[in-house]
Length: 259
Image 1 (cartoon, helix red, strand yellow):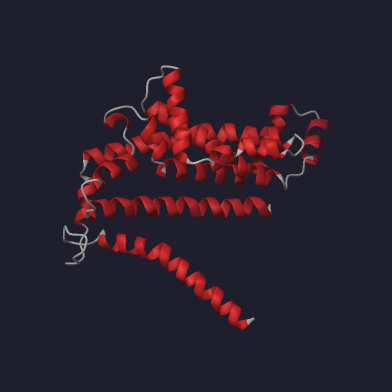
Image 2 (cartoon, one colour):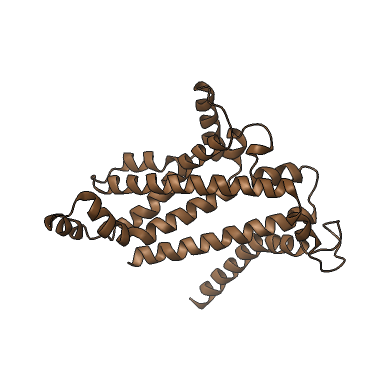
C-alpha cells in the first residue's frame, strides 16, 4: 500500500511538472531583458510597459472584455432559466446529451456550424456575432453549474412561499435566486473565463478588421512571426487573470454544492 502511494505521488508530480513547467518558463521569460526568448540577460519590466503602451493590444483587450461581459450576462441569464426549467422535468439522458452538446463537440465544429448559420441568414459579422456565438457556447456550462446547485435545493421552500401568497416572480427573487446565487455566480465566472480565453469560435465568427479582433486573436497574429518576451508578458497576464477567475469559480461551485 505504501509503495502504491509513492507511485501515485510520483505520477502526480510528473503530470504537474509536465503541465506547469512550460508555463513557469514562459512567465519567467516575460521578465527577460533580452529580445531573444532563449537567452536570459537580466530582470526587466520593459515588456509589460510596452504592452501598456500598445494601442493595438489595448484595443483587442477592450474588445475581449466587451465580448466576455455581454456574453456572460446573457449566457448566465439564459443558462439559469434553462437549469430551472430542466430541473422540473423528469431526468432524461437524451435531454442531457442535447443540453451539453456544445461542451462536448470540438470548438472547430461549433465554429463552422455558427459561421454557416450566419452565412445562411446573411448576418453581418463583428463583435455582435462573436458575442452571440459565445452565448451559445457558454449556456451549457452555466446550466451545468446551476443544475449542480439545484440538486441540493429544497423545493418545499418554493411551495411554502407560494402557499403564503407570493407571486412566482417574488418567490424567485426572494427565495430561489438567493439560495442558488453561489451556483449562478460560479457559472458566470466560468463563462467569463471561457469567453476571455476562447479563440477558435471568435476567429471564425469575427468580422474583418481590428474592430472585431479579440485578445486571443491578436496573440495568434503576433505569434506567427515568432515568440517574443512581449507575447510572453501578454500570455502571463491572461493566464493569471484566467487562473484567478477559475479559482474563484471553483470555490463558489464548491460552496454551492455543500450548501
